[in-house]
Each structure stands twice: as C-alpha cells, then as structure tokens.
Image (tube, rainbow, N blue to C red; front, top):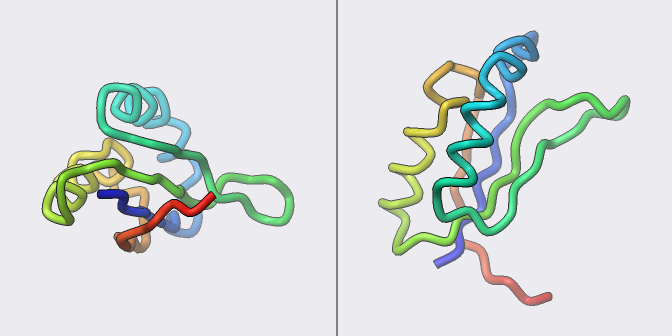
Length: 88
C-alpha cells in the first residue's frame, strides 16, 4: 500500500531540520520509502517533506511517521498521511 506523507515544518525550525537531516536520511534508506524529498518555498528553502511510503497498511505508515527522526526532533507543525495510487 502506498501512503503519501506530507509534513510542513514549524516556522523557524530550519536548524532542527539541518541538525537532524543525516539521521532522517539514514532512516529513509533503511525503511520502506518509495520516494522522498523536501517541500520548498519560493526561494528554494526547505519547508517540509513529501514521502511516499510502501507499507502494509495505514497503521504501519503511522508507526513509520512517529519514528522518523524529524518527527522525534519536533520539526513538523503538521503531518498528513493519505493513501495514494500511482498512475504514472
């Protein structure tokens, strides 16, 4: 099952993102991530994340999201998890 995780950073939290980025990237590489990358503002600055998880069910996606180093560090203002169907 593919789940789209869309997370927006808390305002002024860029340093949290930078400090936690290596651990987050290792977590992405070690788990069931289909695609991932940062959301960007108009100037190209990182303001959030879009991650497509390939997991068994929504419960697994929620567990993945809770264990993301970014989430544990308190980076995100909000996170949504939505089932997604790849067409192209």
